Image (cartoon, rainbow, N blue to C red; front, side, top):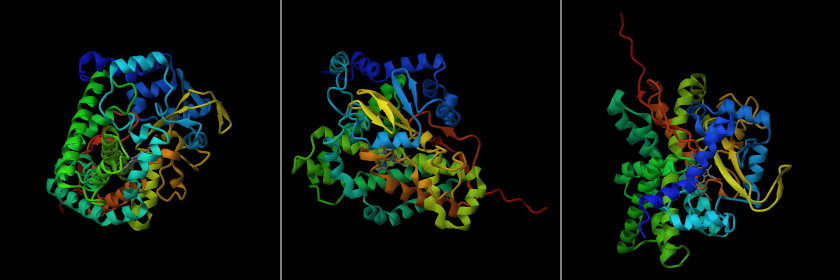
Length: 444
Ligand code: HEM
């Protein structure tokens, strides 16, 4: 069965993206705000005024059959409720016709947001897979990686310094730092990090619902290439003999082969998720932070005067410019959540980026303030069962990367207009040319 054949791929696209794309465009033409947020580039670039308009409308803003939640209380309650699960996480949620068409279309490549990815399944499968990898992400494990992360930062900054005015903050630093850290944690070859980033960019496209057919085709091709590489790598690990505790992929191969704790597809899926999640999000945290701090220089001055504020500043960047703007859940049964009735089967989008600017929780929520003491109440890492496994790692990487960058280049400035990623779920930059040092004025 050729799963890459054009008619099957077109059907997969139609089911996963085409229907959503059609509905969103129709909704946007009719003026629906939530639909316009999906389709209008200007709103994707700056969604925050639209979030405030939604806040003024109602707690759930309809977008066709989908409901959009934006307040902190409601989003938190849904994410923590056992009455809700991830899309496709439970059997019996999909109408029979769609199930038949999906069978005809065949499965796509293993991806970060498709079952059996941990992100896309509910308990008990979710719990079983998550348990296999939590040990590598505990506070203790992350603390042990801090020194090595600082070394990686210093090496990358040396290379940037050598590039001078040709340096790009995203390509040379914000993407390579987390990609190196996660490649080392997984035991994947660090020299392949450029290739991982290229495949990851394709994978990231597939996260947005409603992408074009050509974006979908690229994303499937990149995910297939990553999956093929990953399975070949597992064979290499088996040939040289996996050692427990050596790296995450060795442990996962052992869990599959010796304990039968995972299927082959689950093994590939956990590996692809960890690799992609390891850098596709932290790159946005670092890029967004550099933009914010170089355009709010009084906030940067506060950090330079008191470096103890860096952890708080990272939380504030996550709150103010959340790298993951939205996620989704489906109600398993009729329920009442944060005082709102939700019928069984209802799909709800939670706009984390809007919840993080909810004035009921954050005073003067539209202000970027690195001294904000409650910034850590943000939902940038979600909440509940799927709370980001790498949250502690990402915070550590953000603190180390940003402090090292501004210590080395206190006057670093973006040159021209940085290029935003076109994605709607992930918010960040894919290019940011920078000038590393302030130009020195020659004495007259
Ligand atoms: C600033 C950086 C990051 C942000 C903003 C972020 C955000 C998120 C969010 C919002 C979710 C949950 C989505 C949902 O509830 O539907 C999530 C899950 C996840 N994240 Fe992160 N993440 C970041 C960095 C990382 C890193 C460095 C890793 C390391 C591998 C990672 C691994 C994961 C994994 C494995 C999950 C799935 C957890 C589960 O389903 O139980 N993340 N992340």
